[in-house]
Image 1 (cartoon, one colour):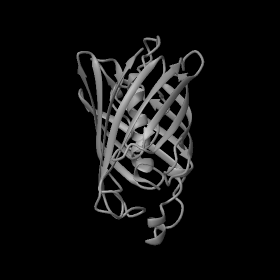
Image 2 (cartoon, helix red, strand yellow):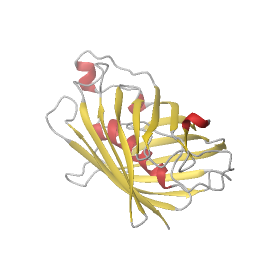
Image 3 (tube, rainbow, N blue to C red):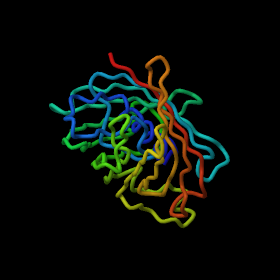
Length: 257
């Protein structure tokens, strides 16, 4: 399994939920804040409402090597998840050193009300020759926790969000190197993430990818009203997979069209 599939594609997809505008939520419902909510796992709030996004990320070192790896992504979010369904479509360069291998990912999202959503997706469908990773399917439920202790009084947004889901591929199957090093063949299939806004500036995040535990921070900056989302963290905090902790970082932006 290529590191970009395991670490970067889900993280990059999670960033672009930030650009989906809130379509008329009731005053008593506090929507999730605008910072990233996962490191390596999907969230149900997919990009939608005619948004274009771009981003890039990297991991260092890659598992069982001394080298780094990186990926870049661009895509669109269409549809209205409050009225019907949101559709997120993206193309990922899974080898930015050569820009020759590309895959596609898709996610359908539906707003359930009460700051909750459900999403289903398909990641890493190869559209060029090359690539050594298989497709991943997933379903995920996300929620922004309501209640006074979890509401930012300034932004009127939920500070605490969580997601729980299940998937195949990158969320269930360990790499050949893991198997060779006696780490087993399969993960838990179940993944999840929790994000909490510790200050009026950034989220602290932890997630279980189905293969390992990860933790980090996320922040959204605005440059001339253009949002720039950054996520940085440490992956593989347990010995369940991989050969030790590694840095994971991703960033991106999106804008309506």
